[in-house]
Length: 449
Image (cartoon, rainbow, N blue to C red; front, side, top):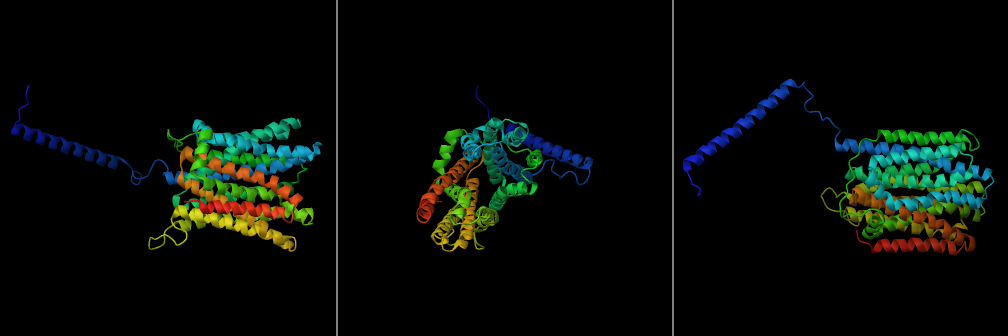
């Protein structure tokens, strides 16, 4: 059957459609008026749920509080347990294995951080990392069997590493883009403070006091309370093309080698060298107490400069008033890379002062301060960069590689540094450190943003 065209029929259909559309609009308008008349004044425009920016800011500060208090308790527990092991008759080498168990566990669990987060979800994973330390702390407090402490310490290290990766990635992801450096810098500062606040609190309470371990547990429980305040988090963004586990870590390593190099240098000069600073002080014929205070100088440099460094990254990443990029710094990505290079220069400059420390012992203080500050700032800039580039599971994988690189740097510095310090303190030790700093600077100089 063929269709028959009729102008009059078309006109009628057109009028009917216009009439129908008009009635629909009218009914919608009437419904809106009725709704506004039956709604109390001032309530109609209020959102029923928090805005995403409000939720993100609340999540960031709750996460900071949770991580801060948990780490204070953990850094009270570690030296306390080492002293308890010594009192139990264990030798120094065996006690050292107890301390290293947590770092080895971090290395083991970090590659699987993205897989665990994708399977359980962010909030559930955070709860896991908040509750397991409470359970392990109770074992330390109540179990008389020292052998179980080693197993429990390894478990605590695994979930501590998982918290490290997840907390870093969440703070970077939820931070406002124009304030990411400030929030990441603040978070790194809080973490840095816990490194010396925990031992200081332990010394103040008294490591021989029976209630010392319960005070440490109280801080960890407080961290769990802050975890309960964290609002509902958005689902983890994951694309089918993104890999999890070892494949995700390998992909992140290939994608951002400069960031991982910065992480290694940060771990080497901030965490790694800090561990042997007391040995360096003893080599200078300082007292044990003065040698130990070198750790405080490094920690102070790390804690004081990470927040200003993050704010500086925010400021320099913005274009000038006339909309142009800044000379030398370039666009936002180039700015972050340039800041990493400047930090690497600082580590090299501080290391070049080491040969003069034997004649001018007072130089050890600014050298330790600069190592801690430049190392911590390198890590901060790397975290800001990866947080700007990635989201979701890709960000977790990138953070995992950064944590791995930092941990490897932190573990390698005491091993090779102590060997060089023992066998060639005047030549080998400064030459080793200068070589690492120079190689890192050279590799960062070759990288493109």
